Length: 112
Length: 110
Image (cartoon, rainbow over all chains, first blue to last red; front, side, top):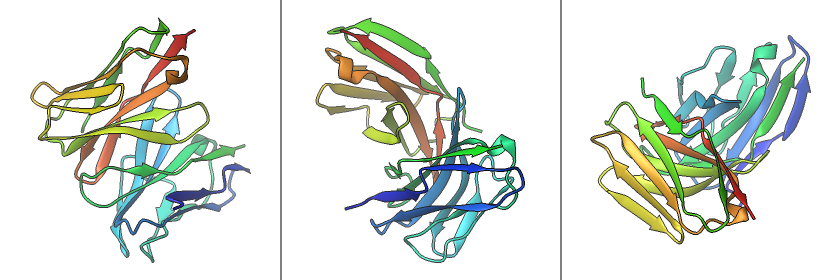
């Protein structure tokens, strides 16, 4: 059972480049979300989804887009990367409202 | 907006000592509270989930308490070992969103 899988594990971008961080889960969870982790600030919610076709903004959504076309996948898109987006990104999924969350292993992104 | 605070930010103890990690939150309207462990450069490992109707939850050497009315949770780790060295995060679960504290980094000295 793979759980939550994130790719890539590491990525370096130049300012202005675009890219997509991939997240897939095989637990049939309805809820999926993206967090970023910065030193001394804890994890902050970027976007989340409560089912296929349904997404909503979290605490820090600016500069990021998401879509949820299937239950399994929840990609995070950076349309024009900025140095302020240098961070570690985590994808998480859960069975429903208020339930335990399961996290992927993270993507370390550097924007130069 | 839910604010979650973890004190202290760092803790160093000799092996065998019991650990007490504190978490406080500002809004008591929560679903659950989850404690995680994070090793350097790694993802988050779930330790315990306390439902809002519970007062405490135990797993092996770990015990977590929850007092919703005062906005506090405490994670106790008994008889600490060097392998317990990590950052411990608490997360308050409100509806579909988690609010995280910045974590307590624990070092257990052999």
